[in-house]
Image (cartoon, rainbow, N blue to C red; front, top):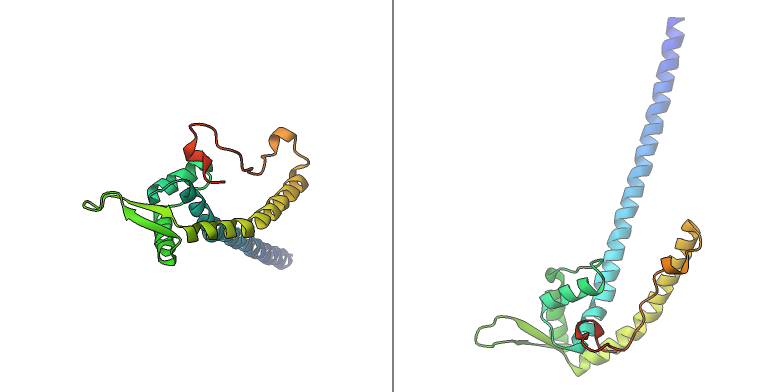
Length: 179
């Protein structure tokens, strides 16, 4: 009788080991998918929205790279805080393309470089706005559908409104941007 009980335990152990290995593989796949999704979202923000947003900010007034990072962080209530390590290469790329012009605030001291949108940059901004608007609206719609599907219809105060372009209020230059 002892041998049969031992065989039963080994069989259970083998089944449990297979179950745990399957569970591990499934969880690992989920983690990889989560990481990939996070990377994709980061790429969309960095490669898609960041150039558009930087040009948008520069349309309102000259900025240095640090101000751009701070402004995006403030405008997104801290949800998106790009690093200067991503902003400055983008500004240099824009400068080479003729979309922005960078000038030292004090050419003798080279303390901070202020970037100004050129007419070519303004045209690129309009082109990017037109191209991104429908993509962003579709993305918002997908999120609304998934949100409602997962959590049920939200009360009106629970659903954040999509960003709307509104006229600037007096004294709100930092948040107004070019329309």
